[in-house]
Length: 292
Length: 337
Image (cartoon, rainbow over all chains, first blue to last red):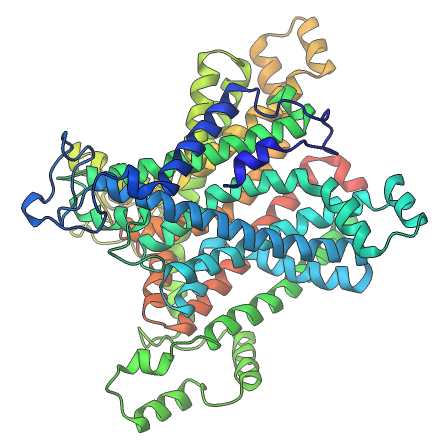
């Protein structure tokens, strides 16, 4: 789980006092509590979920919420609460893998472009610009459609449309940092390029990347659910939230709980990552903290 | 002169990006594991049929040759032939693009009309209940899955209340207006056809609200934060000290200056509108680019997917160019730089 680790970070070089209470704001605390609950559901799914998420009980199809089935059952009699809990696991994995793939790749591209400068920078930034020109979901759909519909391919597709923003952010940070005195000093004492990049530039460029990562956890979850909803992501009977909404679509006028609860789960999960991103941004930028 | 130079640089930049865009989309649709010939003809197609199909769609040459053929056609406005509809992709796009444009404009209009006043309201009442309400609604707008919101909105507006139609662009029994722009609202106004106007407006309400919610949230947030920044400036204090009415201070002195970053955000939301349109159109059976793209991708119709992706990648930078031009005129400081 990335975010508590983020919370524990001493945010050096981000305009904060070392050890500043990162989550003193009650909204940030609420976001972290929600993310914590979400993570517990994901990790302890077999213990938390009251039923097997795939077990069908045709005798109890489309039951409304009740003490036996807190959130009701779906068209195959499967327990919706249990499917949601297992869905949390899938969504969390999607968020982490997308952010890790896109973040690492994009940051590397941005580091190289920002530090090398010249033709390398120009070429890499043009490629980045091309990726930023696509509306993300349309490109992700084209990639997922071409690779074949599956959750893994949806993750690859979303990472492929997400990395460019990290490249641009990192490059901007490196450009503003590389002429700073501490970098000149490191260079003067003979530090290698790799050491300057890894030990001096990257840690100081981390703040905006962490904020972006928090927002992208949410947007990756929403994009994957969207791709699954139109058939390019996870496939039934996987208890993925987008698949669940799609399966409940035909029952929206009669048994709305089939789609209602998975949608709320996405809303809360994405909302908590967005709140966390807002909180981190306010902390890193005191000017914004005053005005927003 | 300086403006022309700025415009030329931006257009050259867009052209360079377009070359990259065509390479990427082409690579995606030609290095796919699934065979488009088999996908189009079915598993029972004979080897001869597959060979003939590959020759017809230029799938039999080396990739570089296929790409050059494609770009050559592109320069003549030829986007290839759709495997699914058997029509020219350019014709399919021309048919479905106006529907998406109409939906996106309606969504953007709703977002501006609701988002800017909400942002102002929230800033003026900072820290009080109206501010709280706007901020919560904006947070929800930034986190809600558009396809789920669409279902909820249909459930309420169509099934429960029966106030609005549940899908499509116009009633089955109302003949569409004669095509001039392809935008039903505009065309029915031009034709003076009130029945078509009423029906197409009613059909727009639910999908436009669904699609526009995300942009509304973004615009409200941006307006709020730039209003707060502007309202703290010295010239606002001066305006108040002069005894101007609060309304004049907020709207004439505050909002006018706070709008510049909001205009940038409006341009940036255009990309999210196009992405959101894919899902919104699928839910509301809206016959636009999004639904066309989904249907094409499902049937591995790569010329069609390539066409939609290219068109979307042209529209997005052009929308940003329009914003930059607006910005250039709005903010004299950018003209000096």
